[in-house]
Length: 263
Image: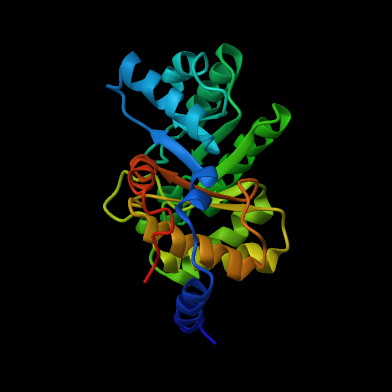
């Protein structure tokens, strides 16, 4: 059975699962990487972000490297930042140097690294994978959680996403992540399914982070149910995350309806 056909069958199963076992808004919040990747964000905006993260105990806060020093004094949750962001084509030595500078200058718990997908698409597979592996090794040495952003919206097919996911898992990573949120196409259930299948079949200890355009609770419910169903695991921030900037506010605004459902 093709990946596409298996995905369509799985979607039908998910609809029934969500009907029988609906997900509450409160189950989403601990899985969120609360994200603000805006060079123009000032102290007040970062302060508000950090306080919101503390109050609602999200999984992590993700900001640009130059903003970590501000946010680390405000929040008590895990701190994440980005590297090789957003295009995935920064010179490799500069990427490593920037990460080393971040490690030296401030505390960071997690790094979301954009895989050199443009090189990979240009058939420079070995170079792209080697660069990724070197960043992973650096993060391992520093006990930093390493998430690899594939930018699935730029990739041609589910089969391609599955194959690349498998290579990256074998290469070394802690999480696969769908998207930067900086191109037109963000996360899709079909891309997430291909990545989850690669994780399942690799039998590796690898998580999934979905991001890019996830603004409504119903979208989050779909990804949560999909991940739990494919990997047959209870959801936990140790292996599943949702990267989002506005989703938390929507969930909180629906607090008077805590069991908003995917119909």
